[in-house]
Image 1 (cartoon, rainbow, N blue to C red):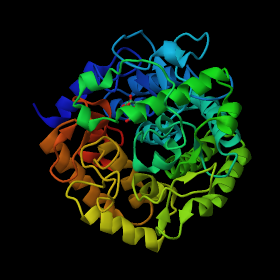
Image 2 (cartoon, protein in one colour; image 1 turned 180 degrees about the vertical axis):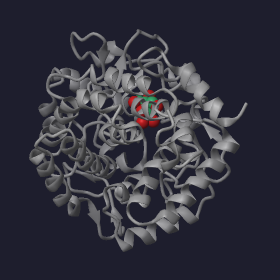
Image 3 (tube, rainbow, N blue to C red; image 1 turned 120 degrees about the horizontal axis):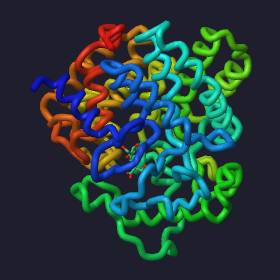
Length: 419
Ligand code: 2M8
């Protein structure tokens, strides 16, 4: 079977009707940003299904505007922590209590551009919800300027070295007994360690203790770090949302104001010693001092600099398959442990869009061809070893299959009008 057909089959097999699992077993629910990549993948062969995916995600938006990171459609005892641990109150379906990178406006714009004007009504229907979510980011998580996260899981780049300094300040010693489920599904050497998990649970327990009042979670919680990754994704998404708003005939002054404020905050996450954007502990001001995918997402928001270019090329040239999630020269680098080094095809796609839109089609083409070679060798794995394309984490993964269809196996332009 050719890879295109296999990718479509992977999406269909993970499709639960209106929402898509990242993969069976390891991740039995709907995850926020996975879902938006799934939608992009569906858009190459089933446009209505693509919009349904985004609708289902946004249907679980909280009254305060937050779109949660997990939607627990059907209880599954083989995932931990489940809805009972998150305890976010009386919601149907139950959800987690934090958000995830807001890629939705950017990908919704791309999906719409594949099929405009036929998709205009679907786009118009989600626009107010996207505005409300972006406002939540601005008012609740961007109070210090850059976008902040209250839990490493909010970044989507869960155990990347960026969060180590913030995690060190979280007391995980009193979380009680629990049984992890992730290490029963995949090789434990590819997953976070026990001490990290204890701290993850401590942060969830704090949220429960304040009834998930998001302002309190931001202001008083045990962990608050500026995330360059979300900052750049949000900045780009603000621009895309304003573009959509104008196309739909709305006044987008408010959105443009959020984008201006966020761009003005970028110097706060520039680490001159590192020559790059860097995660920062907002409680202490300390920088993480680690170069990785968060910094390289700067290109997505048109925020590259010559120093960052030099660092990018050094990091990229030190591996074979795409851009690693952490710097191979750092002692914290681990080629197969989750977010501490592997190459993630969907993140390569976001960085490549940044290169393409900032006058570097050569870099976009290189990244696409390396990512395609990696997927041909390692399959639709959750993530892969950047040195030899060994598949890591879960198999038959939705976002990797989606990225094959939308970008790695074909250019974005070739997909216009495909569905
Ligand atoms: C990973 O995160 C979840 C927690 O949210 C986990 O490890 O249990 C991350 O890679 C995250 O970015 C992703 O959305 C999720 C599902 O693929 O898995």
